[in-house]
Every structure is written in C-alpha cells, then in structure tokens.
Image (cartoon, rainbow, N blue to C red; front, side, top):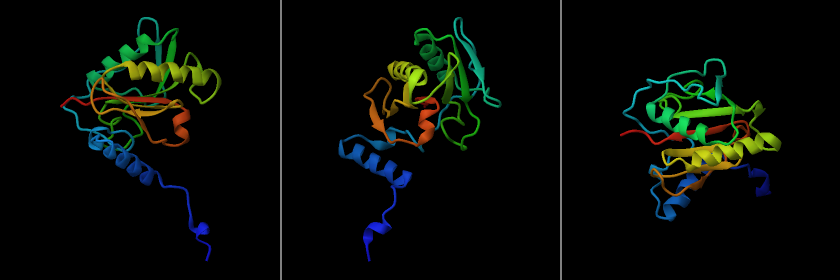
Length: 184
C-alpha cells in the first residue's frame, strides 16, 4: 500500500504543539507565551469601553462594543495614537464571538478589520494599513500577542523579545488582533 495516500495536511493543534516544543528547545517556557488557543486569567474587570480619540474615529461591528479591561484600553489608545495618518478604524471584536476564558472574553484583546475605510488584507492598501498597525502594536511593551497579515508574534514578558507564532489560517488576512499581558 502506498503510504503517501495516508498523508494529510498538519492539524492546527499539531502545528501549535510543534511550535511550543520548538520554544522549549530554545529554553523558553512556552506556558508564558500564550498565543493561539491560550488565555490567561486576569485580576482586572471589564469596566471601560474603547472609543474615538481626538483624531481617530472608532466604529464597531454589530455586537462588538463591549467593555474591556483598563489595560486593554490604555494599550489601544497608545497604539492607535501612534499610527501615522490614521483617521478611522473599525473594531470587529472585543469580547464578542469568542470562547469563554479567551483573551477576548476576559477583555484583554481586540480585533480591527478596517482602517481609514480600507479593509485589512494581505495585499495593497489593506496590507499597508496592517503593517502600520502590527508594527505599532509590537512597539507597545504591554502587548503580549499580535496576529495579522504580516504574521503572528508572541512574547513572554512585557517589553520582551518577539517570537514567531503559528499561522492561524485565512482569518489572519482579514484583521489585526492584539492582546495585552493580564494583570496578576
């Protein structure tokens, strides 16, 4: 029997476990990294909402305007304020549409799918916007995980070194996600 017929594409969970093994081989404690499929408890409550800033109009997909943690709001404001020539953005998810206990559900994550009227994508102006937002998020020392068309990146401590994280599928090309380190 030809064994090649039995080969299938790697399951995303296998990819994630392989990635975590690679980190452990480098002396990094993968349990501190988070990233896809992981969440961390936080002592913060969801008490504030993300909103427009002086020069940036913020809109929301239906059911996306939910309370987040103060840490998320602070990081969001710093990141959005640092993106050059940003006049508007749309948030597709705060705590909505995600599993219980996820970084979204606990109020520590946000997904942005439009910037300056352009949908985030893996080409053209959408890619340019994604690059700017991912770069700004990665400059913020309190961001723990960034996902988007440029790639996925995680770190284990505030201000620490970024490490590549596994590709999560086509949704990576439709929005930029970032989440903050949880309060302990």
